[in-house]
Length: 495
Ligand code: SF4
Image (tube, rainbow, N blue to C red; front, side, top):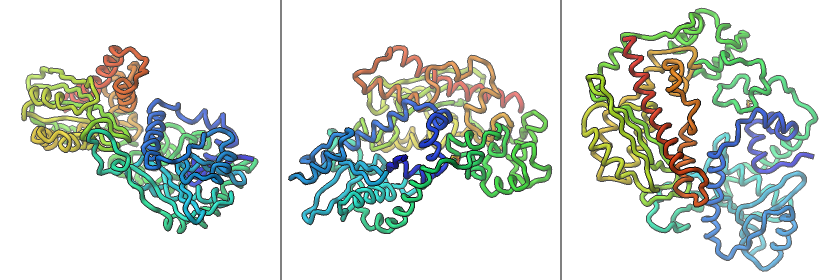
């Protein structure tokens, strides 16, 4: 019989088919699942760190080891004299629950505390803390214990580190008993259905319900259940909505080229199909020229790399806030000459030095160009809060920022971008030169950069060559800003 944990149950609620595959054909499931990254491990480790702080709120708690015998050990410890317990385990039928922190109340009922590394109570589709907690209550109550209170412990988004971290300042405790009770009977029914479903001998493996969903809702198992879908399918149509996917499927249009001429599409979607049909990009010369000529020289093509963690590491920073640890900036002057500036933090500290050097370099002149500017904009706003004496400069950058990506949402469409406008999709098409490829870099994306830099700063067992890691980080960030310069130059050629 397949077992059901809280994590399984949430996966079932999101998608029964993907949980069935995991439970019944694990090899196939793993084949389609992306590789487990160091960044995913970082998120898991941070969850444990938040738990460690939460446990400080219960200094007398008895720790129950998470071994195979933990259910029996829990039973034994709960009948003893202790009042609070860490990681007690319960099982009922094929369900298993490990509670983060449990408190025994005077009337012999129990108070469940679930610890979350988020800064709010999540009630969304993929993360729902109320459903999580009601699963825990279901298992405990059916194992013979009465649960009278349930609370969540999570990070206070207003918290800013200031010296030693005090658990009661960092964390918020919020009772959710009523919210859990409201959905409890529904949860009970859903758990029963989940157990029956994952124990089915077979399901229809030739299609899954995301067939009519947009790509961002597909999980890694989509290609297993829909193996005939190719890269030029309707799911790749830029900003396509579910109702349009349903409509196209009802007309038997799965490939982009099946879409009939005259079918109602946005201008970006129509250009994408036209580009595929004629095998050429579609662009609006006049608009591109007008946009580029509005930029004020010098042009500072720049890109930040940031570190964020559930538990802030630097004074002035809050949970999950971005600490900028690196910048690469290519400055282009009106005569076409280019200068490069880069800075990479040597310590886990606020980037005051970086801002001083950047300001020396650029002054209050020119246009700052980024790709997906809301991110750089947000980083600047967070730096205004933590380094207020550079507020004027950061405000200047934000009010003189141009997002180069916008051109690829409106005025330059190529079917080979596959409906995306990310720099990783645009660069290899506009600038296929091997020296501009991310493929051969040791650091391939922002998550890897964050993970490598964070470990280099914090992990006493960091086992990579520090000089090489610094060079790899510099190479990666340099390519991000250089890529914008090269794309800009290509756009200028078609003006
Ligand atoms: S893509 Fe298929 S398997 Fe994945 S979540 Fe959607 S319905 Fe489930």
